[in-house]
Image 1 (cartoon, rainbow, N blue to C red):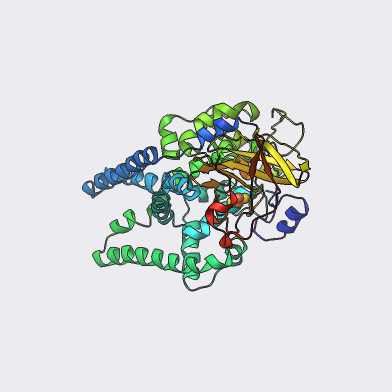
Image 2: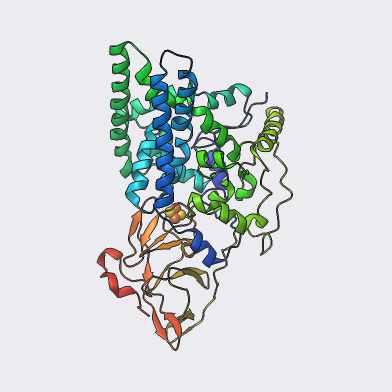
Length: 483
Ligand code: FES
């Protein structure tokens, strides 16, 4: 086996990635009809509620079967199914609710997120920010904390992902350190300073629950309580690893195109239920504002711009095994992906989603931002004026809002995000802004948006593009025009 790279976040590869322009960069995005994207981004509570109830119902059912089978061989398959639902299927619930896309109601996303985080022994705040970084710098070495299969992955290291008898104890030790206020450098590199305090109380909550289960097991002199709480994270992890391996394993590192480092795999309905449709993983990475239940439809919209999906899980695993075997001898080896369609616009690394781009001139101190009838209610439109980028939104009540074009958190065009009520959700990390005040209302976005007053003149939207004062000094209705 050949020595690999240093995958530590913030390690020696981090400055190299920055120098190569791989940090917080703009990524490829295929064209899609903005109205269709708007439809696909719509959230509801019903579908996720049914799926969550089915998941928890199955978990409770197999837990009950395991209980009444104690002392018989039937307890083994019952606990195996319980563990897979707990430490395996819990992963995609954690993921979708962490993005805030599964349910429309924020509190429902939060409840399931915290529950699933505990099942996976992931500190909620730490992993929320770790996943933000994963979406910012996907599989960029030295930056992405969620590279599960560093090159070259040996059979032993792969086995440790499927049965994390070492990793889970390491996570428990890390949790204990965080409870004592000893926050490690990796966590400090992506968790904002004002959120570090949460790591401490979240760690204490985990320790309290795990200690309770352990004390119960010791007092009753039986392992059964721990088989229900704590140990399923280990013995059920194989299902999480089974799905996770299909996401990025063996694909390219240090690229700015999810078609090169992420894999979509066709799976049957049972696997898609267990995995919350995350088999459409390329689509999820490019359009994280689309909830899991709309990913199959999104796939139909954009698949002609993507690499062909693996026809089934078996085929994906065969490719992964072949690639990893070669990478064991040659870590620089990549799975060829020369069948990628050429994006419209030639070799550009970023393609907007079809919103009109208009380079304006100004008259009487006002810039013409386009026809008064655009965008439609609930829609957004990117407006480029010279080198500056703005976003024009129309709220459901017809109010037009012009904001700065790029998210205050990172490299994303807000016009490509989802307008929900009076808020826009960023297309990169699901941060949200109140379009009436500019205030950031969902992390990771924290810095307010600049808003620009607009007027309607002669059937055109015009603006001096002079930013309003800071949002906190604004009255909500003063920066937009009802039409
Ligand atoms: S780029 Fe991160 S929330 Fe917008």
